[in-house]
Image 1 (spheres, rainbow, N blue to C red):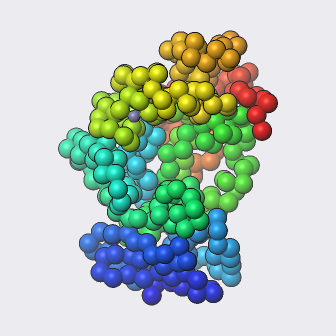
Image 2: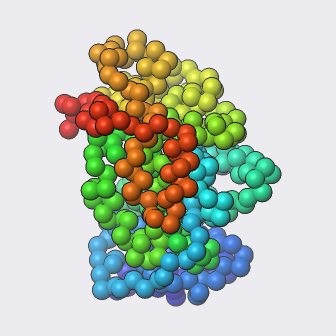
Length: 359
Ligand SMILES: [Zn+2]
């Protein structure tokens, strides 16, 4: 046994290179690198991993606990192979440890795009992406939710578990401004004051892992731009339905792959469904793209937004650099400043609210 919860309702164990997590949601596992040593992994890492996996449903996980793990030496990136994390890959220092969560069940197709990118990175940049298979996305199904991450940080739980193995001092996530300074993608908020930031950033730092959000101050559009500029535009794809360059019929193909010049069918079912939701799914980005491509005829009731100034969408919000840990800030900041202009003080961004009547 590696760690057990106070009331015995969850625990960690291992057999060979497989790490197991047992809870009322059943058993789930991670297949670790061959020379991984579970007993040499700090128990703080198992504790916080538990919190990322169960905290929406199980209380008291962090009770009566004092964190003691010191910071390691390297930054790590939760690398899905999609556009947002690929932009982080471009922005982060070369010493960054790249770790991919390999969803272990169904749909092998979903990894095709990522594997294609990782092979390219291996061949051209000489860098290895560590792929860690796991089935932890099934935990939520115990509470009648679809497969997926229990919390946003569960998307990086493999890095938490491997933080001693890789000697990590920080974990980066590809969260663009759509999910940080915009509430539900359409209303400005002060991200540094949100419950999300105030919960996760100090918790991770307390176990020697600073939270790094390299693209918190730029949009999905800029993430695509960074990926393109770095020469990876022809390799990466966000579509999870079909091989490169994507199916051309899903929302990701519409608003991400479309920018990379891949064709999409505006009349496809999913694209029409999301365009017709109010507020529109991933609003600011989708409507910026509608504006760029002049698709306003697809959303006639929103045509009045044609006059809104979307130009900040391809700039950066300088205050977001304050959220970066001091030790990694400079390089990321300089790189983003090289790709984009700062958002001006009188920009529409500061009072952004595309759907004031929405809840
Ligand atoms: Zn697609």
